[in-house]
Length: 486
Image (tube, rainbow, N blue to C red):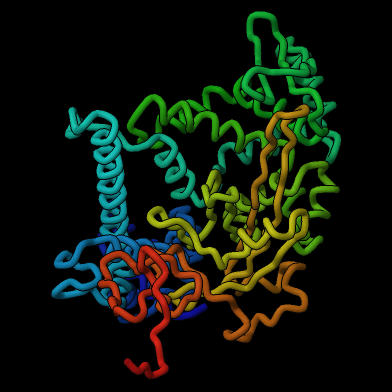
């Protein structure tokens, strides 16, 4: 473990519990002078002290992880890149240095998170003002609007490292009680629906709006789209059981999330129900053991549990039980246009919210090799390296002339975890030159020499040259080198 100084976080823990420095030192079986040195960042926080904090207070050690610090640093750099000149961004009179950003993230994480939240609200307000101005000629543009529901819910899962312990534990217990078998969970789930709730499962060829599940409470029918595979059927039945058997818990979690609207809370309930369904079909302990035994081979896990590539990737990104953690993964799903429809992170990787994603990322290369798993070692501008695995997933439209869906699904982890994955075999993990340099998007990326750069970073002046401009609206002819005679 590298030296980690977490004095402010330790003081905050003490203040939250109303303890004096002496009382905390006694609780942790430390000397008062040693605890004072920890709080003043004169000594690094060690693993034994972290374990004592966990044992005495039940605090998740992730709270003191440098992963959280890295996530805050990335977010703050993005915020500053988005500021206009004169307000701390690029081109400002007094720019904020990376050293100062690191100090803020490490020493005052709550302040850093508050700044990120304020910036998010600011951007959302600007987007709504622009939309209202276009749609209504500016009328009512200053009206107050709450944050976008899906962004709020996404941040809720992100804040919990994409792990909802209450639902994971309940789902694992239900899987054991109901006798769910890997790859055959649909049979037991259908029996549970009928025996406990009087709900019959029927297949329907054409559900409205290409839905995969429609529940009719008055008739006790759960209609599933015809043609679903066994794993897909199991997931849909498990989702319905989440609403029927865990409804009160879903509502409690949604209500306690601090969401700003009924729409966001309703969306959170759906997300939590889907989480429970994934944890029910892929029970935590059994799935984690299988994943470690298979060295996180996604295809092998899919065959073993009877589910698809995307479902396995999504579940792998949730394995962060404090007593039995899996590799902390990031999960993302995009379409060909670069629209991100799913993104989850169990650790520090920060997905950009302003400026899209990087075209050098293998999540886009996967579209050129449909159905093939594409690994990539990538390095971000801050020097951190990651192993990414991407593959396309497709869904038919259900009939002739009905458009289908195609996405690229990617799963990534910090390079230090890469040796645990089967996908690292044959890759040069130790060579920095072997990693593909990627960024969070052109608007916030600092790589000036990138061949795929579409426009300059926010706040940076254009390099205007009459003979050459990378960002001219029309192609500029190369300068003439031959002499001309009149």
